[in-house]
Length: 509
Image (cartoon, rainbow, N blue to C red; front, top):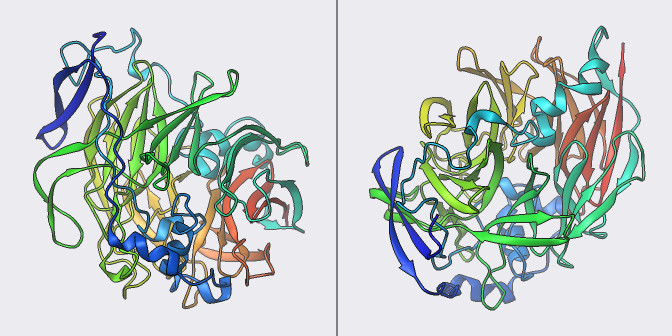
């Protein structure tokens, strides 16, 4: 790799190949804050945050606008996934090129095969990655147990270190992240599903997190939206946290040049995309694949919000550089996971709670070969707002994928990955339903999914496609502390409920 800093200008020659021109630079250009649109000036005049009874999904755009006015990242989970209302437009940043020649496909970047190691925690994370639902004690706990696994009495397992208005964007096997948009307090933490009260902060984070991945090296990678209110503005990107050394660094996304003029979801055409609103991430070998939604908000008229072409951006851990990218088949890629030697990216489509219908463009699943960077299959799902969560729940054998929906329908999507066939199951009905915290038990039979708007955890049997039972985790639906992320572990389901992690022990009949 050259000692000279260089600007990497990606150029598509075909839909799945990329090269870069190398421009030596003696110094890195400064990060220039974006020229904010007049929409942002309206933030100061926004009304106070309404109660959750008033918020629901139909009023979500007002909530996001209010969060944006707090001077932190505009999106907050558990409602992050349903709307693109986060402002993130920044100047292109310098990135290190991956080789002296600028070749986009070095045979071996680090001297080891890309396929030599795959992080089992990556991408699917706590919600249903093979690592969390099919290995160790988790897989053994279900073996030989008959009868449905129904929810017992919920108890508080841990309290998050982010304060009273904090919540849980991502919970994995023994670590997670929490965020608090009011106080600006964000943490990476460890926890123990077998020991209540053992949660401990590893480090205070500079920017509000969305999804977290612990790489094979032990470093933590966290997707975030940067900080548009900072001077200079901090671009959205990928944070790397070294907990042993106690430091964190931010790698901003590079500008991506499209092969030709490409349509956004509102019918306009663009020739480049600066990735924003990053969601899920997965590690394969030395590379990290990140789904970026690339929404363009309009805070004064939410009906005019739209999505740029979706992208999956690839980060090379060895070189510390942005290495490659793919344009997704459909808009708004959110969830990403790894199974069957393939990367699965869920394109949620254009979702906007201000419109009817909420999902106005198709959802689909892109199946990516992680070595050739090619989309080898696309599985259409219809206009269902699928995914939205950042993570994908897989069965332990990798044959089944389960996704929530963000279109107010109360459905989950079950995909047979052997036949690429989806089917729908209605979990709950109502005018406003937001499913989140979906997890799958090791047998691949039972799905556990929360509804932010009624505070319930639902149990679904995939062999009969029926809802078996439910348990209420959040009786106060007038606040903004609803169900967020979830995790199945050792005959319990753990769910984020506002600033707490609740444990729901499972019983059998």
